Length: 159
Image (cartoon, rainbow, N blue to C red; front, side, top):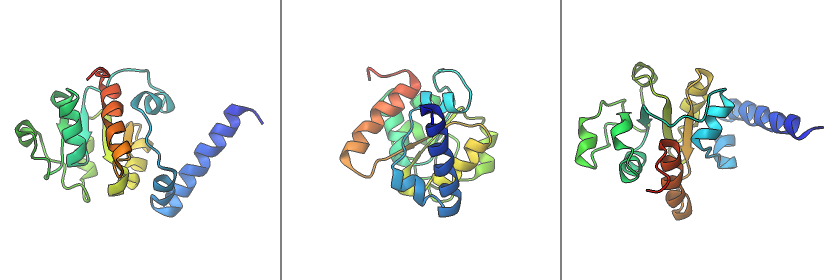
């Protein structure tokens, strides 16, 4: 079997397990794709994220820290830092984001957190063709890595 077919088989198995396991499979695999990988998987080019929705306060703070705060078009009701985050439209909470509000904002990237079980929403958004970046911020290595991932998605790797 070719490498490509093996890759597709693994992806299909992960998706099926994700539907059956309500996100358990995605969390156990610790999937945290980069934006470029996600765009390529959905058939898009390697563009930078311009309209980002954050599903967690930690994601919002990372976006501002790497210089992408001006690209946030939606955040949770708990995203209060930095002060500029308070002026961004709200999508609900991190445990109950509104899919309708997220879709109405027209994001080209939604960034969530594996530890907050955003896998179910990620599956739905991906089925609609919206790239999703799930960050593993449960450990210090993952938290530090999330700065690089969000920076890469915005074209701010140097930050």
